[in-house]
Amino acid sequence: MDIRCARCGTTAVPAGHEDARAFYQCEKCNRVWMLHLTAAVATRDRAPSTRVLVVDDADSLVALIEMWLEDDGYDVVTATSGRQALEALRSQDFDILLVDLILPPPDGLTVAREARMRPRGPEIIIMTGMSDPLRLHDAANSGIFTLLQKPLTQDMVLDAVSRARRHRWSKAPRVSVS
Image (cartoon, rainbow, N blue to C red):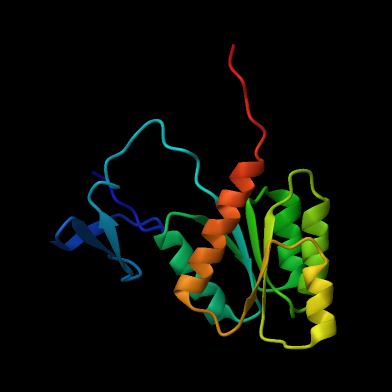
């Protein structure tokens, strides 16, 4: 079986196993990740992965969230400014937008508003370290799914993205087959 690194695409090598888990390591970037052995079985009827756009001006936080989400099976695209985020939104479709409120122009609220204007726009999760009630009120009224207060934890991010994904799928148009 050909296991590849989600970050760089290099073929991974086995790095050990324990219980029903296998560990793999990328020879290029040295990233190590765990895979449940039942998840390693390829299936043809696999649902398409959820596409997430992660936007924050802190490169290290973007890389950390990207790793958390990729390890959980999400297809992740990143941006570090409002301009980059808008370019990504205009060229690709996303299921979830995880965006910081304060960004190099335009800010996270502007990015969120543009995302909401797209047909079948993404579920929006705003991240912020601010506590300004007026600014948070503006964010809450911009059609977001949820607001995450920094500092972020892996559980906090994965829980919010998982809930946003379930919410999005619950709104998906049903296709009837006759």
